Image 1: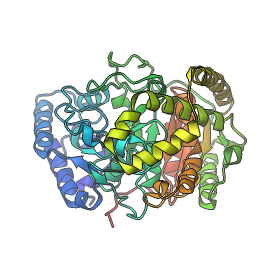
Image 2: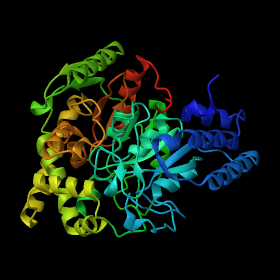
Image 3: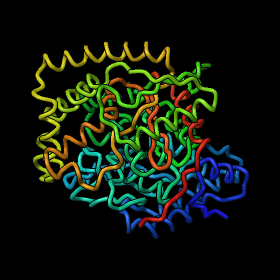
Length: 459
């Protein structure tokens, strides 16, 4: 019989809903798992077991009174430390923000609570959420529970490590350049970057962000099943007036043609053999499920990645560069220098041209996605990187940066992307704006033809 911490979110919610398990039982089991494995991987960096158990007892009492439980009733989740959770510090991995305690929940956190989820801890991120690796001077380094020599991904590396090791069933993450999709890939999980505007967000602990982050940063779930992606998204996407970009849009958007574009090596990207093999296997799984799959080039990705760099670095240079200096963390300073060199000098003309080019690219992509409702492509051009590879040298950083081309491109387009776990290498799906239903359908078809994702014991 499976341990309670091995159950998926859908299984937990079903057991709680029918009265087979109490929320307290589920929460206790996951807190015990956290106590057992977290010292070995450092995924959760803020713990509050008494608070979690109090929430569990309260939910059990409300269910006993006949209250209708939400879609994630009793499901243990984690929240990334770069979003506000009432009563806890929104550190973003920074020593200078260690005392920045939130007095209200970010909308995504509030939505998850209303859906019945129980927050069992807050997960690690690199300083400034800036890297595809998870390490900082405040909280330390997070290890990949499947292989400690490899990155757990970043910036939501703590979230992915927590889900993979059974600390929680759903990990909240954020994505501005792959920070949900890559940790899911590195830890052998599923991870969704929703469309811009699908999931409301706002950190009251800080000022509103500038145009780059407003257009590209989103929250999304990391899970061990595609069905859990769907449940988590439904919970996260509830309306909230605090986010001016929020768009009320149903998850199910109607019928679509089951046609996929397969693009193994977009725009000259050099892809590892194992990645290409996984993509062809995923294509065959889709075909077996009744999809038509055609290998074809996609609209531009390098231009979109360039726009991502320009928008992100313009914001960083305008608002964050002094904080990077003040933090004095060598890794983030090195990475910032490399990213700034790639973006070049961003003046007003450059920023205006980038936002105009973005509209042109979105038009090209949305037109392409009318013909091919889903694109099957790499998450990364390489297998998960060795720990700290990006800061070993400028050449190593450029290797990492190039491999993450599609992760960097997608946020500039506002499109949703889903990492689908396969053994040993996951793949990425892209769909049109607000067509997460297509991603979930295609992801479920790929998932159904292979082994299920299971919890691992950290090495």
